[in-house]
Amino acid sequence: MEGFKNIEIKNFRGIDHLKIDNFSRVNVFLGQNSSGKSTILEAILLLLGMSSPDLPQTLNKIRSRNNFSVVGDVRYMFNNLILSRSPEISAELADNVKRYLKLNLSYVFNENEDIARENAPLPISDNTAYINTLEMLFDIVEKEVKNSYRSSLTFNQGGAITGRKLADGYIEKVYVSLITADLLAGSLVNDLSELFKRKQKDLIVERLANFDKNINTIDILNNDVYIGFEGINEMLPLGMSGDGLRRFLNIVACSANPMTNIILIDEIDNGLHYSAYKKLWEAIFALATSTNKQVFVTTHSKETLYKLNEMLEENTDYQKELRLYTIERTLKKGIQAYKYTYEGLSGACENDIEIRSTVL
Image 1 (tube, rainbow, N blue to C red):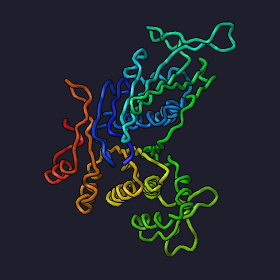
Image 2 (cartoon, rainbow, N blue to C red; image 1 turned 30 degrees about the vertical axis):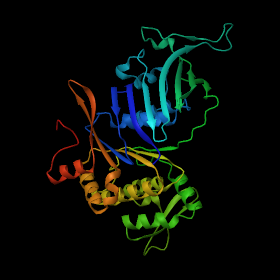
Image 3 (cartoon, rainbow, N blue to C red; image 1 turned 45 degrees about the vertical axis):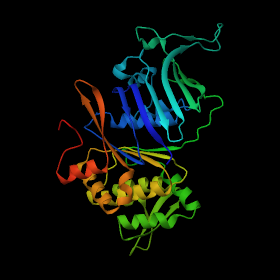
């Protein structure tokens, strides 16, 4: 299996320090609101997009649904808004390659000035008036050989991008897809186009028929997705078929796309009726296994976990592929991740034990 063995996060958003080990094929993060579940997905995404200096901007836009308008917005990447403590994310992947990423804020002189281009240290005062550059400093360590890279994004004080530098000589080999809680987000048309090109339309129709037995075909027309139903002579735009079908199809198509190595799904139950949970879990495990990809999911839905347990009871081969992590903010140890395997999930469901949070 491709993907992550572990991850360590420092000073990133609401996480001061968190280390999670022993990831499996499908990894589910549980926890209360604002426990840090979505932040973990963002950390994984940053490690797989280290060469893209626009990625932090994109993540902030997803969070706030606004543009990255001023340099000060970068502060929200820093734990407790302390700019002198750089966020750091590291991980070891299944191929034993290690990744290290550090986000750094600095001041970079304009090349047009009559002064040599150089980086000035970040002011101790954390005054954003002295900051105009976000740097992504990262290392790739493979067989004890370390290669270091730098990508950066430079702004003026009005928030406009004045410079962008990509990491020289770096090509990303692991492809990730983020499915946010926003029902309209995703790369559905691209995923379906790739599958149709590979003559796998029947696979998607089969999964959709499991969701709704009246679905008999799917196609892309004028860059939009259309669904065919029994008894209706005309195919309908996906938008006319409800948010639940859109969400289900978005996740299934992404899971089936062999070009994607890792999938991040935030609030998996969002927009879905509980009757679809079990079908969706079965599709995720089946497709992730057949395409050899790794999946990370967040949820705080008890019904979702019960349906996951039901599906695994019927599909015993998938049981070893599951890891659950309850993300908890403790008084003495700070933020912690408590790990469960299938046996822990099964026992919790059988005895009605709460595992989404230890303090509920």
